[in-house]
Amino acid sequence: MKIIPKAPTAKNPPEQFTGDVWVDPVASPQEPDQRMVVGRVRFAPGARTAWHSHENGQTLHITDGVALIGTRDGTVVRATPGQTIYTPPGEEHWHGATPDDFMEHLAMLENGDDPATTTTWLEHVTDADYTRAASAED
Image (tube, helix red, strand yellow):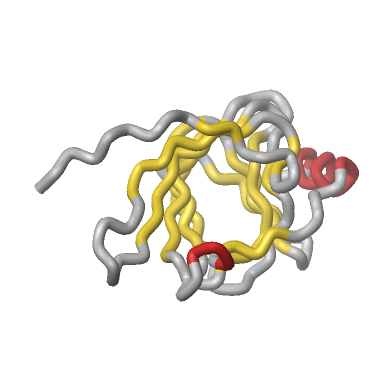
């Protein structure tokens, strides 16, 4: 058993996020055959990821605020604290906060064979698409 030292909070890069988004690593592989990665991610109001997909899917567990999660077919899910959303491998999606509130989630995924290519980052979500998603009825 060991205590894993806390890594510093990092601000996510503007190439992959719109607005202010911070991540605190929670778990990462400790042994050669492990793949699990978990991060606590906090989004300022209006902040969101760019479009992206994950080689082995992703699970998001909302811990604070209201999350917006969108898919390429136009589906937008609003998730609240305690809810968990799963995106399957290869599904292009984005997630972020509503325009008026902070949002926090735990992001959980398994690295691929090459951890550097586990997530495929794509273009930013346009302001028009975000506004349409944020104003959609539940």
